[in-house]
Length: 159
Image (tube, rainbow, N blue to C red; front, side, top):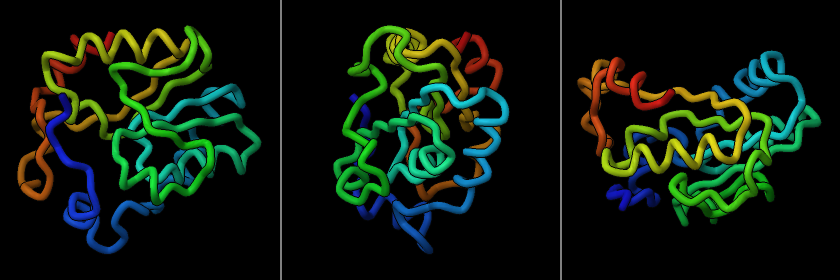
C-alpha cells in the first residue's frame, strides 16, 4: 500500500505557492518528450493534476494520465486524467508508445517496486522516468517518500 496521503495538505506542504497545480516545468517537458519520442500515445503516471497531459494534448499528442490521489483527480487540468495505481494499470498491453513518470518511484513501497515496474513495462513500449534517489532527498522533510534508495539501487530495479 502506498502510505502517503496525497491530499490537499500534502501538495500544500511540498509546493506551498501552487499546491497540486505545479505547472512550471510541464510545457518544456512536453516539448522535450515529443522531440525525443515523437507524437505517439503517452501515459503519465503519478500525473497529479495532469497539466503535463494537457500540455501534451496541446501538442496534438494522445496523452493520458493516472494518479492515486483523489484530491489530484478532483483538481485535474485534463479530462484525460483518471484515478489509477502504477501497480495495476488499467490499459491493455503495449497500449502506449511512452510511459512517463516524474517523482513517482520513491513513493512506491519497496516490496511493490518489481510489480509496479512490470506494469509500467507491460503497458508501454518505452519507459521514461525521473526519480529522486536518496542522494537527492536529503534536506527535504516536507514529504515522506517510502522507498529511499541510492541511484545505483534504482538503476538495478528499473531495467
